[in-house]
Length: 271
Image (cartoon, rainbow, N blue to C red; front, side, top):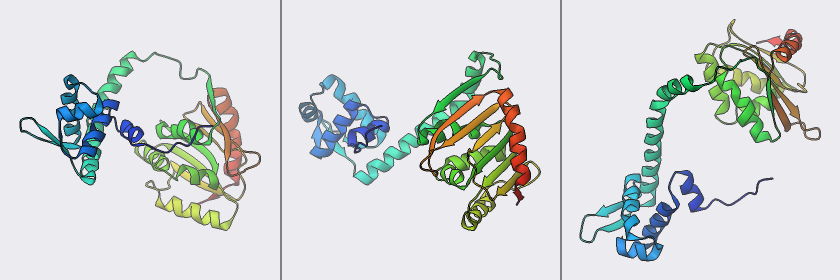
């Protein structure tokens, strides 16, 4: 099991993309208040041949400002100002990358192997967080059809973060043919499910159908794009937690499970 580690300034700033030397330099300027390159080199042990580039990088991030004197002086911006600049810098970096994604996709498609989409493939995830990050998140990339059978507990976990919204938007934008069954144990759960249904960005129609089922869904599952299957297994001692999930590309299994989905669907209540 992964250790719970207290976040450090180094760890967080590294996640923002700063190098170790950039962080060392920034923390030194931050602690000194106003300094020149010679003083910063003395405190960090970083040679002068590297320190000027590091300081320019920190100015580009918006963390420090430079006084164009001789010698140059370096001063940290206020923390609120610096962190807002860093947020804007990373956001603009993300926007530039996002604008290049269509070109990158086109280039990578030319290199992609021409594999059989029906070739059997499977993998298993044993951690609840990864069940959602690696398997359930695949519904964000469904191409044309999805049949999903879950319960209130599963719905609650999916919609806790942004994932549920991303899945709903994908289904809406691509006009995915969707059948969604949601099981519930109490009228309270049913009420919460109905509240969620009415807040979704896509209206219920012939291509987007939802039914409720007053039963516990012992094994939530999803079928999509005619050959893909996701099965979620509950923890035997903690029914609101999930133990593992299986993702498969298996047309035969998809066809075997489709009648099961249909039989559950027939028992459901239209919204």
